[in-house]
Amino acid sequence: MPGPPVTRALELASVATERTTAATDAVLALTVCTGIGWLRRSTPQSWRRSVWLLALAAFAGSATLGAVAHGIALAAPVRDALWQPLYLLLGVALALFAAGAMADWRGERAGRASLPALLALAGAFYLATRLSGGDFRIFLLFQAAALLFALVVYGRLARRERPGAATMALALVVSLAAGAVQAAGPLTLRLIWVFDHNGLFHLVQLAGVVLLIRGLGPSLQPVRASGA
Image 1 (cartoon, rainbow, N blue to C red):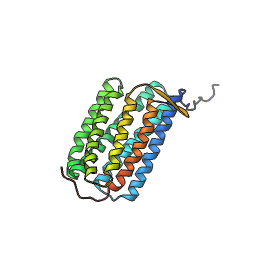
Image 2 (image 1 turned 120 degrees about the horizontal axis):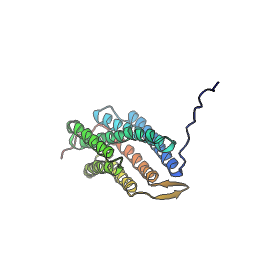
Image 3 (image 1 turned 45 degrees about the vertical axis):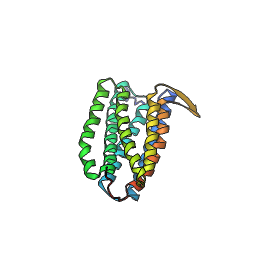
Image 4 (image 1 turned 135 degrees about the vertical axis):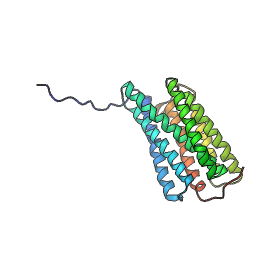
């Protein structure tokens, strides 16, 4: 009689740079989750806080999926299926990010009003990425636009000495630099382990995430809404 079916254990990706990319994705997810916990404890409940925490949670979810997609040897259809919610979560994170920046600039009402359009725009860029066969450079355009908008906002708020704004502006500069590393195309660098452009993007983005969370602490304290 035939024996019981053999269940194959999950195997790590065979390419070294895929494993380091997965590891940096996992570190990003863990850092963001730690930051969410810190912000929940140190800032009061508000619509702005909810938006930022949801943005961070969506980003952490995308990083977790990225760790799986890069780090585990998966069949091509399974890997492709993982990319779809990953892109969607990134789009949601950026839309919430931009809405949070709008609320910091123009007030909660403006932030709430902008959110549906931003989510629709994120969906459009996801669809364009999907229809192009997964060309992530299309999505990077949306990311760059959202980050540049937020950089202008927090640069203005920093000049007005809004608490946390200068740190958040610096975080955005670092995040834009990270995006430039990823958009630069294939490259490898040995920093004890070998990293490709995706892993290097995560390493730079990690510094940006830490700065962002650090700036959100004072930013999410009750403040008077800023005008134009």
